[in-house]
Length: 196
Image (cartoon, rainbow, N blue to C red; front, side):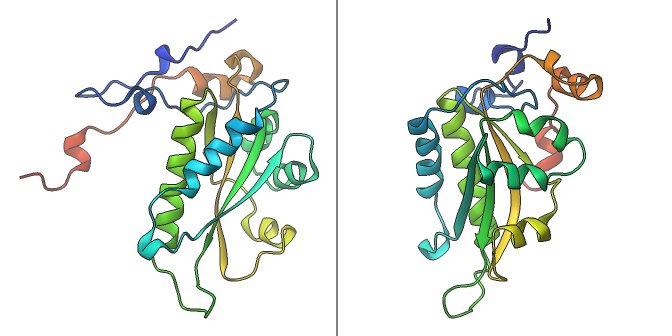
């Protein structure tokens, strides 16, 4: 049995950063028998709620489906590719939606950015509380929006699996290989364009 511990997945950083950041990673192997404590899930959503936003517009919206619910099944049915093979084992699936216009129809140009910050807060709080989050782009966006009666002022950006991590051995071969592969990031000098 392959064992992946948090310490084995810790990021190799050039200087120390917060443990909750260096230890955070996005697994595909979720424990299909574990349920998420409601207070822990609420804490993750609270962290998302209290993230910063332009002009305090708070444009983030979430559709939360717990495993076994109709909402979860609807979200899972709209996943694509490899995501269909593993995400159904998560304790919950969360659809992250940006409200891209205000009540008067005026565009909210920073809504997508603000939703991203909100999801970052959610994932860090979840990780702090012993959960893992894996955000996905492989899903049928238009069909999912239609399934939840979302209007043109709402834009779905990601679907996230959230739950308790399981052994990589629960995954099929290709996914297991990706699960245990070394974590990699571009070097700082590749991503910082100017630093003087």
